[in-house]
Length: 203
Image (cartoon, rainbow, N blue to C red; front, side):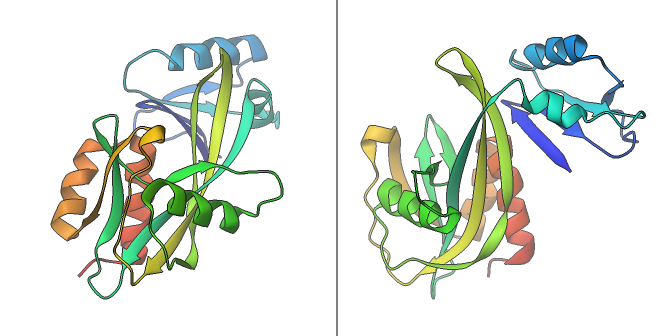
């Protein structure tokens, strides 16, 4: 399902109406859709769904409101310890990620960003994990960052935080540390980490 995070708000485009009480807009016109999206940039925590019963492509209309930024990131496991590489930024736990440069593949983008933001070397990609999307204001313009995530591994443990990107520190977290980090991270990061942990449980 296509979904986009706006801070703590979440916008969904389900095939049928959610049964969990999610506020659902059925067949909104473009003006209404834009107005509701604008409200999502305000602080708050809500789940909103847009549902079409006429075949109209609401996701396409929604996407037309935004500049789209391709990005890549990695969830790195240290072998043999099984610890996960996380960064601390803006007082929260995060994962290394960043914009894709011209000519890069998603994999190249993800590997480069992990190396640059954490100083970690000897990285190899295990498999793709998923894509997260989050909306934000970029130079006064609505933008969505589409981040392709990859499971990675390394046997090297040396790190060096990229301070110019606002990274305060880089740490290898064990299972308990990751569980604690999940309580102080961004919703899209929590989602992709939980997906990863389902695929690759920690010891």
